[in-house]
Image (cartoon, rainbow, N blue to C red; front, side, top):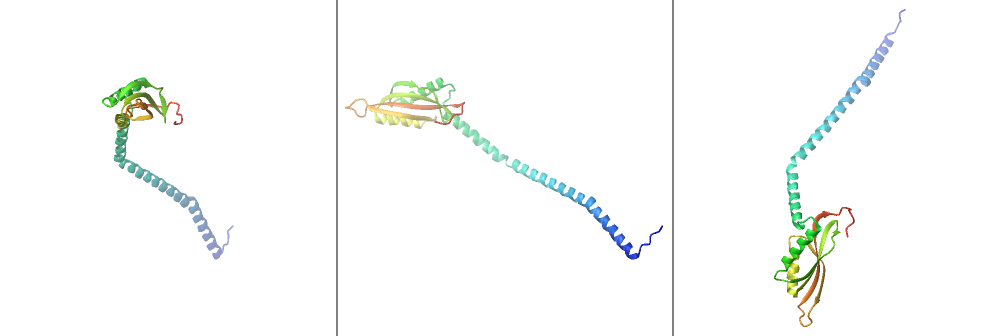
Length: 192
C-alpha cells in the first residue's frame, strides 16, 4: 500500500506540518518561556525598587536622628513645664511653696486652700486657691511672676475687692492658680 500523493499535495502537507510544528513550538515552548522571562523581569524590577527605597530610607538616617534629637528637646522642655512631684498632694505643696516664693516682697498671703485635683484636657490639674492682700501694683507684679515662671501655671479665677474704702489701692484678692503634673486621664474622657 503505497499512497500516491501529488507534488502539490506534498507541498501542502509539508507546509501544514511546518505550520503545526511552528504552532506547537510557539504556544507550548516559546510563549511559556516568554511569560516566564517577563515574570522574572517583573520580580527583578520589584526587588530593584525595594532596594532603592531601602537605600533612600538608609540615606535619611541623619534626618531621623535630627528628629529624634528634636523630640528629646521637646520632651525635656515639657518636663520643665510640669510640676516635679507625681502625687497630687505633693504637687499641691510644691505649688504652694512656689507661690510663697512669688509673694516675697510683693504681696501678703492670708490664706491658702488646696482644691480637689481634676483633669483638664486629659492632664491632671492641681488647683490651689490663694487669698492675698496687696496694692494693685504688687498684685500685677505677683501675677507677672506667675505667668513668666518656667512651670505651666494658669490663673483660673481672680476676684478682687477693696478692703478699706479710704485706701482704694488696698486690695484683697482671691486667686485660683492651677499647676499640672505628668499624669494623663486614665479614662480618656473628653476635655473640659
